Image (cartoon, rainbow, N blue to C red; front, side, top):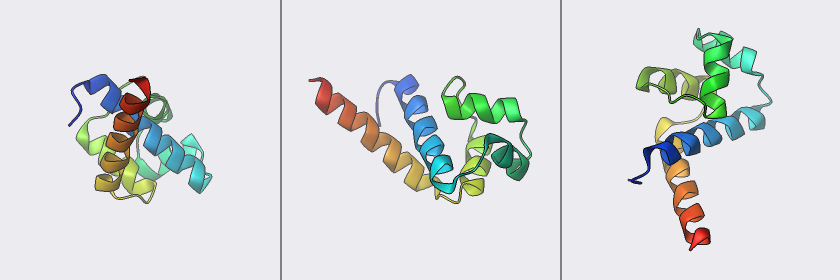
Length: 86
């Protein structure tokens, strides 16, 4: 697991944001599907605010992506960015 927790939060947010774009879902649609407030979803998917586990799970479910896949993709993004920065 990456040492930099902020990088991990940002990578998870990016994976979810890209998935939302793939599905052509608005933030409002994700908020409606999850029961979370629009502002909360917006701040989570922009990486401004880290997600608690429950919110991560409901957002992943709304975006029709397995949470373990989100984590794998996030870690791959971090490792790739580390490889290109050295």
